[in-house]
Length: 449
Image 1 (spheres, helix red, strand yellow):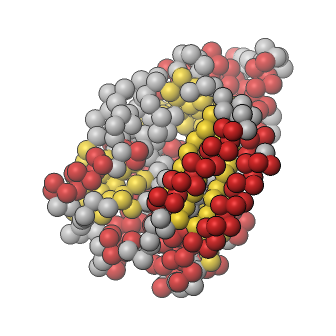
Image 2: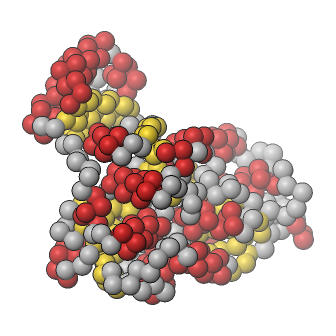
């Protein structure tokens, strides 16, 4: 994973592109940058996931922040949404999460969270890039009593657990579920939460060793929790990713239930109770066509954004929606969180199941998933490839042939030289044929790298 200054923060392979020196420098920059607008000593809260390099990078960014005069509060191993929650709830000036989310253990990253619990966005990293390339000129070291302190803050994690336990509105007694923790940051937190509730839980992949995070488990591998559910005749299973900000589920029969299902299930639940703010659900351009059609049947409005949870959250705030998310399982339940939270997603689905007395399969059944075929192509010029007249002509022809029974989506990656082709229709063979035709057009125009 090449190092990136972008919307997801600093990212890269630990000790290659993402070094302690770079992270220390970013800590110095961050503390200085935030401190300029504060009339008090800056307080930063830090969490990390379970990958081997997270200890090292926690020490590096903590040192950098303290060198710029910030007091650092360490939550230690915890989830990304917990840092977002605590940053806002406890009035910190910023939060930092050390994680590479669903990536392999050897990758890592730095996410920065604003005082309102939202990601700070790409501006902070672009600004740091300028300082880093200029030898950090203009960023002084704190001296004497201005040097920052380091405070153990495990109590912040406990406050977050209490928050999670308060999420269900009814008793979950009688439900039997499985949870795959991806050997990640949720491994201890999920145990504490569900030990406080009445449902019966079987855990898997909850023994992190520094290198097994996301390794053939978690939200990218729902087959693991599917096997657990089927073998033990559980009511449902939920798979989290390494930092627990996304969730993919399976029902009692092992059928996958993803973010599109979650959007429909919770939106219809809220609408029945007169609580669906602005009668609106937010998804993304890759949300399945079946979701739009199912919401239309329920009389619920649906709008889409570009891909990425930050775009979903931004749209939710602007349009006054309290439910939104991505097909991949990044869900925002605005009543409980400002960010995607896989444990909150799990609890909300269990809440609906318990209150309505219906299985997850029943709740998800109104959504008919249209087949999707997606192809990613590495190209020499992603913008030119996606706007080439010959390629656009093929896309337009196929769009016309599909009519209302399908659609074509072609977009380019924000961080790599890739274009992504998606074709969706009722016929999987048609999806494959049309996706291959578009890919062939890109190749014929000489854009493949």
